[in-house]
Every structure is written in structure tokens, then in C-alpha cells.
Amino acid sequence: MKIVQPTNQFDNIALIETDRYLHNSYSNFEDLIQTIKLAQSYVNAKNILGPKHPVKKFQYNSELANEEIPFNGKCTEQVLEELTEIFEGSFRVQSKNSMFNLIPNPLIDTLASSILMQIHNNNAIMDSYGGKSILFEQKVSRCIGKLIAWDKACGISCNGGKVTMFYAIKFAIQRIEPKSPINGIPNDLVILISGGAHYSIEHTCSLLGLGKKNCIRIPIESNEGITSEKLKEVFEEQIKQGKRVAAIISCGGTTIDFIHDSTKTIYETTQKIVKEHKLDYTPYLHLDSVIGWLWFTFLKTEKDEITALSDSEEITQKISCVIRKLEKISQYDSIGVDFHKNGLCPYSSSFFIGKDDTIISNDKLSEKYYGELRAFDYTIENTRSSNGIASAWTSIHRLGLTGYQDYLISLYKSSKTISEALNNNCLFNLIDNNSCGWEILFTINFAALKDKMGIPYSYNAIAETFIQYIWNKVDEGYDIPNFSIVKNYGEWFGKKQNHAFIIYNMHRDVTPLTSKSIAELIAEQAMLFEIEIINGNLIPSSQTLATPIK
Ligand SMILES: *Cc1c(COP(=O)(O)O)cnc(C)c1O
Image 1: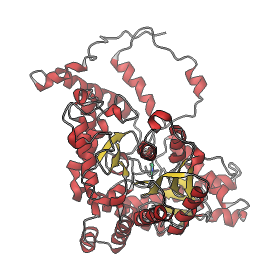
Image 2 (image 1 turned 90 degrees about the vertical axis):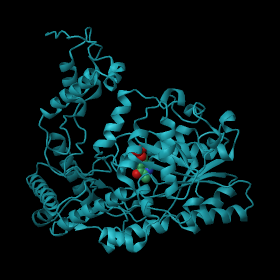
Image 3 (image 1 turned 180 degrees about the horizontal axis):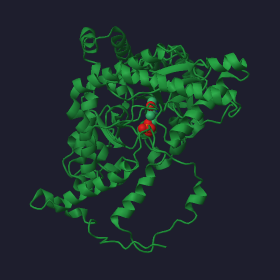
Image 4 (image 1 turned 135 degrees about the horizontal axis):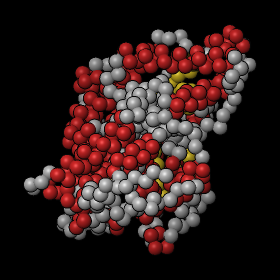
């Protein structure tokens, strides 16, 4: 066995010293930059072009069997080179063929801010540790809150959209049952959610101890969301069973179909039910706007101004449609924002934002001074990084309102360009899903299979086998579009249809040429796939695909 003796393990351990670069010596800071460059050179050396870093299937147990702490430390070069294995199988967001989901390609500035927090090892646990981290956290929250006329908005930086819902449900339970932090959750509480809500809500309820079965989905029939009638029906059924509805969580834009409930419908119907049944509580209203928050930036923009900005009636229609759904949002209690989805920030930079300043603590923020805020009094975490706070703040200031508007419009435009390229090829059928988002849904007309074999297999079996074929190739390192599949499209509207393919592009300024190449590459893969089936090398079957996107 070759033993590589470490040079000097402690050479670059002392990040504490990096602040010397502020004074007279740049040495440690330069060391850090050099070390990152070195690590990146090992990534570059792999010369990967596709939408994913290639990976070979592995089994966890056999990978882990011989794993232990090395007796002696290794040198920087060796460790960093070995580390790059971590990327195997991960997305390369830089690739034009990366179109799998809302996966960010962060701005340099938001990345730099996040890394800067790491360099200084800033802890957003409380004022005396993290300096103004909590103040900046509140600045971000206030800025977003003001878009929806919440002039006292406060918030919590957290690890993801799922955690924003965790906070919403937790605050809802605490509001209806103020003693629950001490006594636990009473068993007559339920929450109502939209039929189109993200799959992570049920698990969140289970983590909170509320229980999945107390998280009730209200059926929806279209991306227009929950109707007043259905809400009333489900709510009254719960009242009849002696339950109290602690919260109603509405959709504020989803990945597929951009399901968005009307905040006016939810608010007014809830008010009516409370009055009619003389309830001694009002359900907490949360909007899961982790994607939809970006549309808030248009709330104060006139329609003709939007048209002037977008130069497209269709895009204006979509934006206006979302804006209409936000009437009465000011009556809600909280929202969620994922800057790491469509705020050009790196992971993790989500925010739970509440309408008022009591949300983050039982005492009013307006009465606090520096030194008095302790995030751990209301956060799920104790120690917290300030990465998300810094990158979200940088995103807000770097882009401004008009920057966000341009970004959204450019995503719509890129998507339109890709749709047009698909539409020009008779292999693809676009599904018009009447979405206000920019996802592209389509089916593939596997014509060769039809001609040669009369298609003895179901479309869904072929579609599932095809997407697995694409994903296998992407995992092998092929530079082909990495898109996804929606199983039984329409299922959440109670109108189950065939599977649909989905392209989720996050690149701005996609050109017609790039779009043409995307369409051609998918067409080529479809042809190669058909040959494999015709030759009997592949047999279509319904796979047990984990639903990768929702
Ligand atoms: C992505 C998403 C979530 C979960 O967010 P994470 O950041 O992945 O935790 C919740 N709701 C909606 C609508 C989402 O799109």
C-alpha cells in the first residue's frame, strides 16, 4: 500500500486567520482561493460535459464495509481529489441539457456571499454570535413581506420549502392551542391542504407529531385550486367529527401545472364558516409560495407595463392570472419562499415569512434591541449557518424588483422557445396544460414502434422504459437532455391520463438554436430506443419509478 505522507496538516486549518486579509497579510485568504481552485481543477480534469456527473450504480453496504478513519491524515491534493467523487451522479446545472426540475444555477454574487459566511464561520443563533445575521434575516423577510403589503413581516431563514411548512403548521398549532408547547398536541386538531399540495406536507405533519392522517387533502379539479364549495364541504365534515381546523395550507404555485389557490376564496370562505358555526378560533392561513413568490414582484405593476416588459400577450396573461389569485393575500398569516429555487441562490436559502412581528417570538420584535434576539427561542435548529440569509439578501439587492421581473420573463421566453422547437417536430405532442408556470409537458409519438410492432405495449410502459433509458444514459455521462416524467398526468385533478414527459428549464436566454438541438437530441434518443425495442434488447415494462418531480 502506498502511503502518502501529508505535507503539513495544519497549514490551512487556521481559517480563523483569514481575517488577516483585511489588515495586512493576504496569505491565508489567497491560500483558501488557491485550495478551492485546486479542488475545482480535479473536477475539471474529469472533463464532464453532460447534465450529470457520471455515476456507476453502487450498493451502500459494500461501499461502506471497509470505511474507517485513515490512521494518518493525507495531503491536501489527495483529499481534495478523492472528495470530487462526491459529485458522481449529481446534477451539472451549468449544462444546457439540465432540465430536470427547479434546480438553481446561482449567481456568482449570491454564491460568493454564501461562501463568505462560511469563511467567517458566522452563526445565526443569536445576536451576540452572529452579529447582524438576524437583522439581515429580518430585512429579507420584510422586503418580501412588503410586496404583499405586510409592513411588519418577520421571518425565519431555513433549510427548504418543507421547513417553511413545518413552521407554518407549528405556529398554527401554537395559535389555536397556546399550551401545546408544554402539553403536546391535542388530538382534535387537523389541517386542511390543497389536493395539489407538495408531497412533503404529510411527512411534515408526521414529524411534528400531528400525524399524517390529520393532514386532509381537499380534492381539486383543475389548477384553479380549491373551490369554495369543496372547502366548505371538507371543513364542515371535520366540524361534524368534532375536529378543529388549525390551519389551511394553500398552493401558491407548483412545479407542474402551477396549481394556485385563490387566496380570496380561501380567506372569505373560511371567514364565512367561522361565523356560521360560531367557531371560537380562526384557522391559520399559509400560502406555499416557495415557487410563486417570484410573481409577487409584479403585484404593483400595471398590465400594460407588464406587456411592455414581456413583449408578449401570452406571458402577460400568465402573470396577470397569478396576480389575480393573490387578492386578499394580505389576510393570510404566512408564506414560504425558496430563494434556492427561483431566486438565483445556492442551497439552502428558504424563508418562512409571517405577517407580523410576533411570529418569530412571543415578544414583539419592535421592542427588541441588538443583543436581545435569540433565534433558538423559535427555530427548530440551534446553531444555524447564515449562508441562506446572506445569499437571499444579496439576491434581493443585486437584482432588485426589475431584475426579478426580467428573470421571470426570461424563463417564460426560454420555455416558449423550447416548446416551439418541440412543436416543429412531429415526434412530439405538446400538452396544453393551461399552466401559469414555464414547465413543458409533452408526449412522444413512438412512430417506429407503431409501424413495426403495432405497439403491443401500453404507452405508459413505453414511456417509463424510455425515461429510464434516458436516465441510464445520463448517468453514464452522455450529454443529452435530462428531463423527467409525470406519472398518470392529471391524477391530482381526478382526471388520470397517460404519463407525460416534462422539461423544466432554468436557463435564461435559451436560443432557438439550442432549443432545436434539445428537440433533436431527444428525437435521436427516441429513435435509438425504438431500435433497441424492435431488436428485442429492451422490453417495455411498467417500472417502479419513484415519482421524481411534483
Ligand atoms: C419544492 C417545493 C417544496 C419543498 O421545498 P424544498 O426546498 O425542497 O424543501 C414545497 N412546496 C412546493 C410547492 C415546492 O415546489
